[in-house]
Image (cartoon, rainbow, N blue to C red; front, side):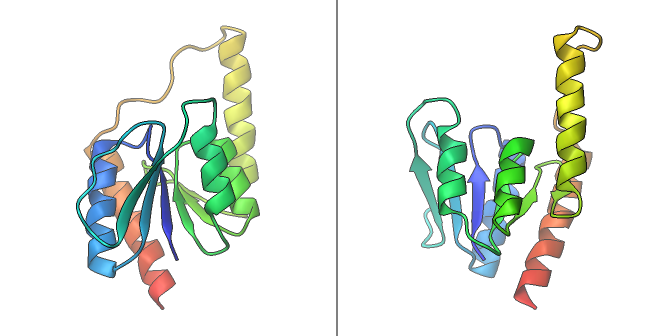
Length: 149
């Protein structure tokens, strides 16, 4: 298993958890972003910078990810694409996107997008907090333990 991070939008606290997990479990961790992301020096952690075009990081993740890999992203359409390839996707808030749940998450995302376009609702997700960080760490640990067994 390799771990890919859609790094442009990933919260710093989630990245820190991922850095520690990669070092502890000796798992390859790949950050893909449109700009430089500072990473610890490690043979297990590397960054890839893609051009700044629309969805370039997403395209690279889809191209590189293989069955069994883990993708960290809050982008539900990206999660849908990698799940279709046999990957697991994990939101930095701790939500797991898998074959059983991705269709529902995509439908809710599309509905909310339509409601915002029609100005029936406003705003987006709340700010990233300690609860989100803990939920993410717990789900990541479960996925890594399951992959190891």
